[in-house]
Image (tube, rainbow, N blue to C red; front, side):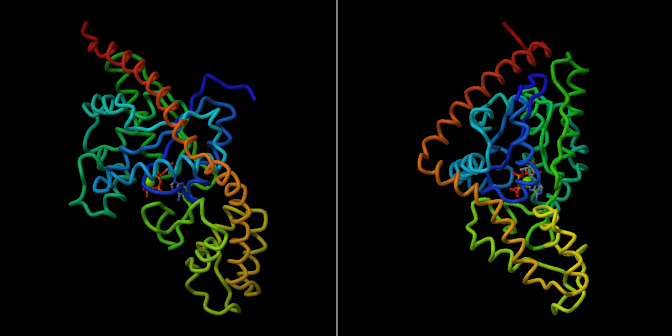
Length: 332
Ligand code: ATP
Ligand code: MG
């Protein structure tokens, strides 16, 4: 397919643990399609991970490699996508500092995602770096002049914040930066196995992409369902059942049949869960096969990150040159 150089994709993941099904439907699936058409950058966000995991920085290296392996297993093509490490591109930190001069604290405090994440952790634990992570994310996106950002719904306010930063910078100094657009996945927010919050690495409510077939079955078995349904013959309410949302996300073609069976009390939760576990395993099977092949050569992921980071850094240096020029900071 023709590569469209007008558009550039930037997206990424915090290095806080293995990738899960929420990542797949929220963002990875789009990335796999988009890498065919657009110059694609994928960021391993280890600095952003520190905003919540600063007490365990030593684990970042392991998470970084795991996620790189997840990318390869899921079908990110290392020939097409530039995968790089955030902390090894110090220009991103420099750009974050410049942007932070004209972003108000109130705009960050009112960002709905920051607000709900801060509420989860408790406001007395609201750190300066955490409050500012959308600014750092704006630097991630703009250093490579990305135009498209495939993300889950929780990230949409951050892309909006980035657009504002770009407009403000261009108006204050010179039109150097590009306004990006969010590209939200088919399932903008996959709910976790607990049925409460979004499936997330940090909440222990996820099915990871490297889960074995047995693990998938066990996790689905204990997933929360419609609380009003106790016996199979009780009519169920798929619209409030977290497991039903998995049918919609992963087996959309058959979800009507499941909904009818559930409502009429002819399909019990055991059968419903057996079906969806089977479907998820079908999805994960080719990933398992690719993973085995890549794991046989673990140096490959490291080499890929070194090459990707080198390319990202070259672009970052060029953007910083333009940014400094625009701001009048190019002292010579
Ligand atoms: P953490 O709990 O450490 O924040 P996470 O599971 O939220 O981890 P991130 O690295 O923060 O994962 O998110 C990476 C990308 O995946 C983002 O674009 C995010 O919107 C998307 N994403 C994460 N979880 C889901 C989900 N449950 N449904 C849809 N998209 C998701
Ligand atoms: Mg997150």
